[in-house]
Image (cartoon, rainbow, N blue to C red; front, side, top):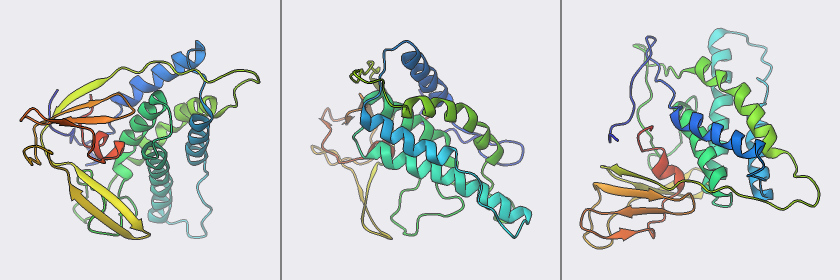
Length: 249
């Protein structure tokens, strides 16, 4: 697996969506749900319902129907899907298969991390540059993002459904994944609205901050292995601070 982020652009200059993980995790989720191997726990269903609300939210009515206003509204809807997904992913209370699915959704909607409203502080997370036109206007692949909605709505509707009375949650196993990554990881905090903090994660043994890291995840904990031989999961990183930086596999 390569360390480079997928930065290929469409002919219009918009970044391609990273959907490999989403395709894999969606298929796995559908198979597990249909076969009865996954009966979502209440925390999974609650997170799915919150994301579903964003997936199905209609575009807000606008008196000003100019093309730019309409495009901004569409991008804002997709940005809200990303932010709601990240919130429930990083809360750390969903099951491993739900976390893997939420992470894959977040990765697909990553172009809207800062579009149309970037985080307000310099310390806020950054996950790659947003492609822009010659006029400096951000050009996320809005139509491609919206094309994902029908399939995701159907999947998250099933996830959010209340389990039949008398049934208990059942969680399928999730494969552990491991990848090599060279670069920094930044641990971000938000102690107050509009206030962000950021700290570069270092190896507890040698103090190295740029790797190469061996990143291992079982969707309950992320472990960083340093080239000096030390490994730690006491780094405080949220899932999104690791997953969204890794290459799409």
